[in-house]
Structure formats: C-alpha cells, structure tokens
Image 1 (cartoon, rainbow, N blue to C red):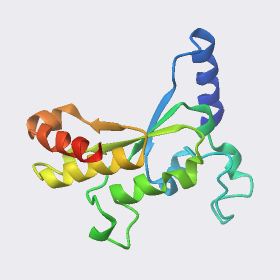
Image 2 (tube, helix red, strand yellow):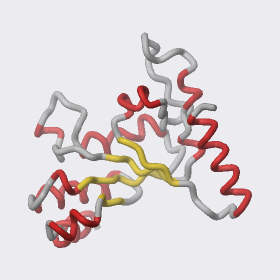
Image 3 (cartoon, one colour):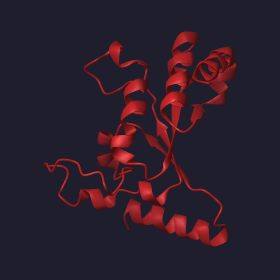
Length: 163
C-alpha cells in the first residue's frame, strides 16, 4: 500500500462516517525532502522534472486532492529569504511557493515552530504575519514554547499586522 492509497482510504472512511468532517495532514514544507519518506503532498497536476529520482509518473502519487487542509510545516530558523538567499529553508519561501505544488487542491495553513525563535519577538511576529498573508490560516507549534517563552504578544502582533 502506498501513502497515497492510505490517505485515500482514510478520507473515504472519514467521509462515510461524517461527510462534513475534514481530513487535515501536517508535513514539512520542504517538498523535495519528502521523497525519501514516500510523502508526496503535492497535487497530481504538479509534475516535477523527470530525473534520477522522479519518474514521469511520480506526479500520480500526489495526495493534495485527498485532503481538506494541509498544514505546511514552515519550520525554519530563517523567517525571510534574505537571511539566507541560497537556501530554500525560510518561512517566507515556504509560504510563497507551496501553491506551485498543491495547485489549489486543498486549503493550506502555514505552520511555524516558535521554538526556533526563542524570545525574538520580531521573528515570531514576522513568521505569523507571513503565514496569515500567504496561506489560508495558521498553526503554531507548540503551545509549551509559546507559554515558556512568553510569545503571546509577538503572535498577537503578527495577527494584527496581517489583518
């Protein structure tokens, strides 16, 4: 059984019990790193360039059309691309490029790991802002870091800036 088939089976079961219930999936926002774990959260319409890794039919394993909400794990120490322009690993990059992969097949919530920012309020506020401006919602991981590092005001500021 493939992960795509598993997700499809889970969706079918959920919808048979309650058609209004949503299927949410979280994964790392770095799509290229998901191949090694068999996790293609992209749309079947996203066709990566054929290579030694991706076959011409790899796009058929995408499962974005089987989920209602994808929580895009934009867990990166860098918030802005300008902090490390040669790297894919920034919140800004992840929340501005995911659509290339999902093609609108599901709603996407930006998800940040506030543990990466400690007490850097501006980084937290910026990450929250970027998620809310570029995705359909926000998930903050994890509450213990928010509480222990007193990050509430920074999160609130990011929300206020986005509205």
